[in-house]
Figure 1 (tube, rainbow, N blue to C red):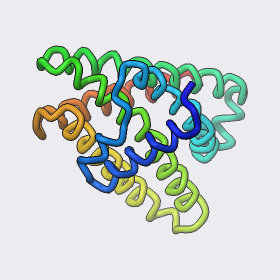
Figure 2 (cartoon, one colour; figure 1 turned 30 degrees about the vertical axis):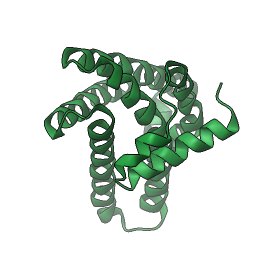
Figure 3 (cartoon, helix red, strand yellow; figure 1 turned 60 degrees about the vertical axis):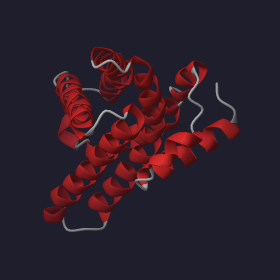
Length: 188
């Protein structure tokens, strides 16, 4: 488990990347031990994940199934997403001859999820309670585009293989994420 100072340093590095500062990568501990520690970001993101889940649930969905079933299925999907994409990303990086850079990417990607989850919770609250319903899809779309751009920048900065490679990695994450979301929601 990372110490408080390590978490703060990693979040600062991810924040620098969010500001499109490629030097943000220099603030990460890029050791193999740090790869494992970066998965603790999933624990920091889980409350936000639950908040987003409850923001999008409607009474009809809850009436069709139990809240326990929804939480169980969505939590399994959450764990699958946090484990499947790293395997896919590492395999991708290995295939393009940048296996070691794949670990650097995972560290930055995992910690960036804390900022992305925070942004999505803020956007979810704004669209649920503060803006007209008709504007919500546009705001959601803007947030998703920003998150994909952020992830693409992280891939470019961490892997250093160019925009096409970064874009391909983002597309893999997007396809996997949509697949997991469709699968989990099909259970309720």
